[in-house]
Image (spheres, rainbow, N blue to C red):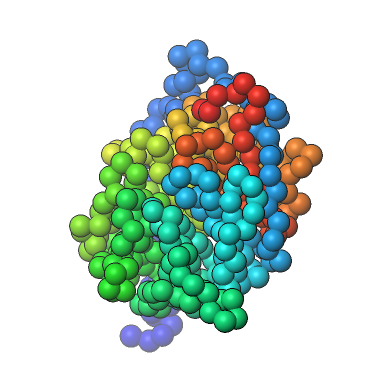
Amino acid sequence: MSVAELKERHMAATETVNSLRDRLRQQRLLLLDTDVAGYARSQGKTPVTFGPTDLVCCRTLQGHTGKVYSLDWTPERNRIVSASQDGRLIVWNALTSQKTHAIKLPCAWVMTCAFSPNGQSVACGGLDSMCSIFNLNTQTDNDGNMPVSRMLSGHKGYVSSCQYVPDEDTHLITASGDHTCVLWDITTGLRTSVFGGEFQSGHTSDVLSVSINGSNSRMFVSGSCDSTARLWDTRVASRAVRTFHGHEGDVNTVKFFPDGNRFGTGSDDGTCRLFDIRTGHQLQVYDQPHGDNEAPHVTSIAFSISGRLLFAGYTNGDCYVWDTLLAQVVLDLGSLQNSHDGRISCLGLSADGSALCTGSSDTNLKIWAFGGHRKVI
């Protein structure tokens, strides 16, 4: 068979796949007679009352000299680790704004960071395709640098995301540009399981984000440049439990809903979406109209402790607070006077839900706390 014939058959197959995908999308729309917001309105539900005085910027963390790419809170809620384009991890005391550690990284091109459940170690990864572990109790060397306590090597592409398995300081999951996710045993430095790759049910492009189910740590979800999110069971690495379609751009961020039965996504298509892991159905789309202008990409999301609020950061500097029940924006932190001056690159909620931290390309982090008599939602 000639090259020309192969190309012709490939084009025909691509057209067939696209046609089937469109038909599948239409069938899904026919089956879903309503969404969460439609049902909530039919039951007379009203939006959360939320204003600029309900979530206020109480601290600005200054110290990075490059764009902030990633952040994570400790479970005890008083410390934050951030990763920046300046090639450093900084551990902050969230109550005082003081830096407790400034770690110079072996590879400056860092993309992700995470605290261990006991708060004694931090992990990070980036373009060196490694996941580096630092023990915060380790003494620094003569130059003031902290040695790496463990290097997790095995990915064939950049490490885009990492998260420790809840209540386990010895295991974490990474996502990579090599289309896979990996479960690691930190004690041995070896891969326990590889999700995707040569398996047909895996992602077909770079994996950008992972989120582990807080209610069942054997389950995690991943988001990818192939416009899908996939649910995995760490006991069965050979195939994804379920694949979730709907987005029309890279899925940059995924986050489990507090009850563990749903998860949210954020994408380059400018939307956030809510999916049910039990049925595989898309429950809601969170989409703000932008007229003829291209919608800003969603970079990071987090749910409030009850799940009633969805915090979403965007490339244009907006940070929307969505009412998840009615799919309405109740506040835009980006419109407030003391907001960031650049794109929101990452955000995260403290373990008790009392504070939100945002990181930006303006090199700063900001801590937002529920103000006045507003109860944590």
